[in-house]
Length: 333
Ligand code: KG4
Ligand code: ZN
Image (cartoon, rainbow, N blue to C red; front, side, top):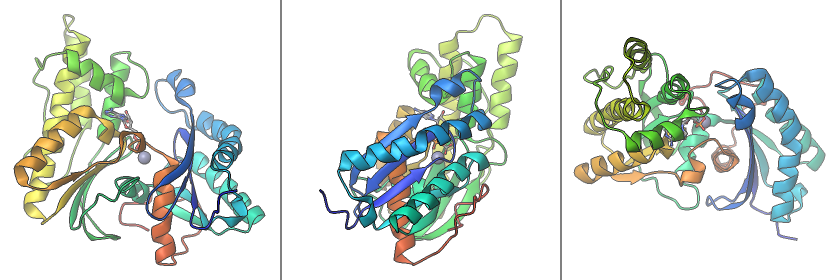
């Protein structure tokens, strides 16, 4: 049996994936598992919170069991269990937190509540250490769109935020308008590749500081579809993605001009976007900054990022408690 000395079990249930992984202090992922709920939420065109909690209840223990079995470890020797305590859907968070508390009690292993956003931050160091400080962070997910500046590990300052929707939410809503299913990100990106940028959708707040707004862009797409009947889904997708990219890249450029940084770190589900990855590469080459991206597999929600972040909590001996915290910010521990 493999020695468990130096492994953390990460549990992530903040939204619609039951995700579990075993990770060492260097970010090596020893085993991981995900029970996806896409088929359930696809029926509703978005995440249905009550169904999400119930599916987590069904999947959490089998997913933990399969990860432990794959790794061939004795869980009583784990260094710790790290579990997302927020932000996220309260019912989903509670399932993960209660499961982690029970397992920790049974195995006599400490349990640490982890900020999901700190998890996304650490995803860029999974499998290989990439982040160099100081760093500008762009966190783009279904729940968040923000910019932060990190002078060193744990030293995080929020420098820009969305005033309304996140970019991932805009992707998901546009996908719904085009009847493309859930989640919208990958399918909108794919469709956009075959279309042309023919419609001048707005670039919200392009010239204003570091904040974002995506609600107006989403509404502009909705009005366009209602007022025209000669549109091609692929051109709508291409034009929408072009607007999103122009805004995200312009804000990164501005942040990098205002905050000294060795690297630009892009994390969160939308960091899986090939268009965003390509354009960020061009930006960073132009500015001489290193671009740090999580491996594609670890861009969307996963247990490995929560496990790696848990090591930071152990480092500073921070006891966060195991209460659900649905509205934690990037600056909270
Ligand atoms: O980080 P994440 O898995 O969950 C949250 O913490 O919200 O992000 C999910 C979001 C969804 O809005 C999804 O549409 C988007 O990430 N997403 C993408 C891509 N893959 C996932 N957006 C754009 N392009 C993608 N390839
Ligand atoms: Zn997330």
